[in-house]
Length: 258
Figure 1: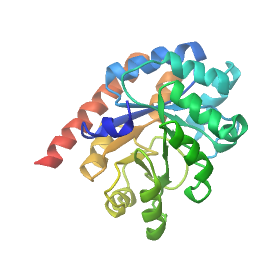
Figure 2: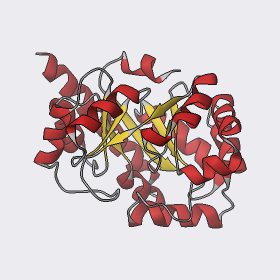
Figure 3: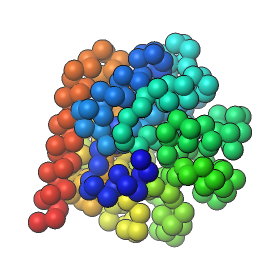
């Protein structure tokens, strides 16, 4: 399923997990359970030894995954095995994409049912070669904006992004937070409405997910809170959290229409 089709259904819940944590073999079933619990899009992270955008929770998950044998080849095997009826999105860093070859990486994504790519350290001004490769294989290249992104550059990024625009909820790295900042609400309001807007970095509770939807976002992204529960082996709690967040997102979407 393409990302554009998914967003036709209304506000969405996007769930990140680190591929290979706790093991490569466990990831496909985790993906299936997350989708059954209510995830509308799966953001599947490729572990990296130097994840510059990640906080300690996801850094630790990546270290565990690498120790368990995760690499780029295994990542695509796992992604193919995680056959679910919702879009899958790659999340990872450009040097791993570049090392494999841009055309090959985009082709492998499409082959495994990955219809979007998020590459946090690749700005749109330098992304033309990868965007061309993605276009050949029907993969959306997704860009990010932050609260401190200048207005003119927000317009550029919003125009260039594919699939959706990733709004970073706060400056800094990933990680669960206790509140949604006013800066986040302001960013949602400032971004043009041509492409769907998904808010991540710090969303960890149903109330936070609902708040960003009420503020005008089209999707809430949860990551570190889920990765933490996986690390502690609390998969039933993980499913419950995703289910409650999905309910909150749907309710907030209905309220916004009233």
